[in-house]
Image (cartoon, rainbow, N blue to C red):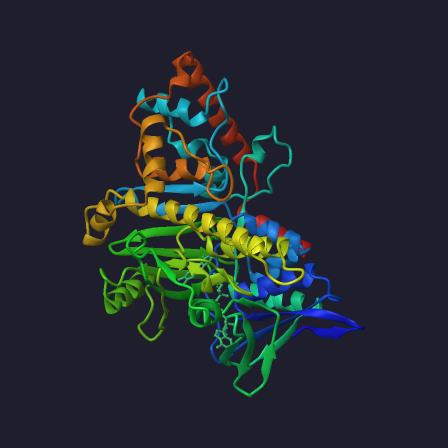
Length: 504
Ligand code: FAD
C-alpha cells in the first residue's frame, strides 16, 4: 500500500471528510508528520457538504492554533472571530435566573482555604455578594470589556482566560490552506464504497468516478455518518440520549449585534435551549430541542418568533443522537469529530474533543503498523474525556428547578451516571469538587454551575474553623474591589477587536 518517494516507502494516510474535523486533522498532520515518510490525502464531497455549525470554542483552541503556528490576529480576521470570556446561562436554574460560566476563577484562597468555602460561609451569614461578582472574567463579560490576560501569575489579570466565537466554515478554509501548503493532497469526490482486508483493516475507498484510494491508515472525519468506523467497522454507538435528551437543532444567522458581547448566550426554553453567538460580521442563532417534547413545527415557529424573522427565511435543521462510538480507534482507522461522537453544543466542547483526539493521535502515530499499545491508550484517554464532558453537561439539565414543562421535570427526575452522582454528593457534603486530576472542566467550572443553579452544600467546610467572619468579609470585599478597579480600566470589547484588525 505504501508508496515510494526517493527510494523510501511512504506510509499512506487517508483522511475522509473536509469539515472542521477533517481540516483540523489535515493541518496538524501536515505540520507534524515528515513528508519523506508519510503521504497525506483528504477526500471530501461538495455534494454532501459539511454540518456547517460549531462557532463557539473554549480556550484550548488557542493552544491548537499555536501548535500550528497560526498568527492569532490573522486567524481572527479570516474567521470573523470575536473574543469569548464564558457562557451566560439564562433560565437554567429557575426560569428567571442567570449566571455566567466564566473562563477563569473567582477569588483567591483565604489563609490557605479555598475561596468558595469562605464565600459560602459569608453567603450563609448574608454578607457576600453574588459569586460571579468575584470573577474577573464574569465582570469583564458583563461590562463588555476585553484585554489579554497577564502571564504574571501573581496578577489578578492572570485569573481569566479567553476563547473565540468564529465562523466555522471560514476556519475550515483557513486550515485547508495551511494543510495544502504543507503538502496534503485534496481529492474532491463522493466515496461510494469501502474495501477491507481479510483482517478487517480498511484497504481502500472507491470514489464515484471509479478511482480507488488505497491507504495504510485512515482517519474517519465523515461527520454523523461515521462512514468507516461506524458503517464499515461496525463499532457500536453508546447512546446517551436518556441523559442528554436534545436531538434536534435549528440554526440561522442574523445581522451582527449592535454591541458585540464577549460571551455566548445559552437560554433555556420549554424543551431545550437556544444559543446566540456574536461574530464580527453576523450573529449565529440556534434552537436546540428534544423532539420527544417539542414538534418540529412548534420549534420553527417559536424560533422565528424569537428572532423576529419572516417565515421565508428557513433555518437549517440538524438532527443528532447524543453519545459516542464505544471506541474511536478501531483496526487501522481512527474516528475524529462527529464520526466519533457528539454530546451537546451546550458547553462548546466538540472542537475541543476533536483537538484532543488529534493531539493524542500525533503523539502516538503508528511508525511500523498499528499495535494494541497505542490503540488502547488512545481509546482509554479519549473515552475518559467524553465521560467527563458528558457528566458536566448532564449536570446543567439535572440541576434545573423549572416546573414549566414536562421536559424540565423529566430532566430533574432522571437517573444520572454514578460518576456524576458521586461528584454531586461530594459537593453536597463537603463543598469539594473532584477535579479528576486532569482534562476539561476543573473546579471553577463545576462551582459556576452548582452555585449558578442553586445547588449548595449542607455544611461549611471544616478547614474554615479558625477563620473569623470579619477577616473573611474583609478579604472578599478587597478582592471584589480589585476586580472592579481592574475591569474599569479595560478597553471595550469592540476596541480590542479593532486593535486586532489593525495588527492582522
Ligand atoms: P462535518 O462538518 O459533517 O464534515 C463531514 C465531512 O465528511 C464533509 O466534508 C463531508 O463532505 C464528508 N463526507 C461524508 N460522507 C462522505 C462521502 N461518502 N464521501 C466523501 N466525503 C464524505 N462544536 C463546537 O465546538 N462548538 C459549537 O458551538 C458547536 N455547535 C454545534 C451545534 C450543533 C447543532 C451541532 C450539530 C454541532 C455543533 N458543534 C459545535 C459540533 C461541530 O459542528 C463539529 O464538531 C464540527 O463541525 C466538525 O464536524 P465534522 O468535521 O466532524 O463533520
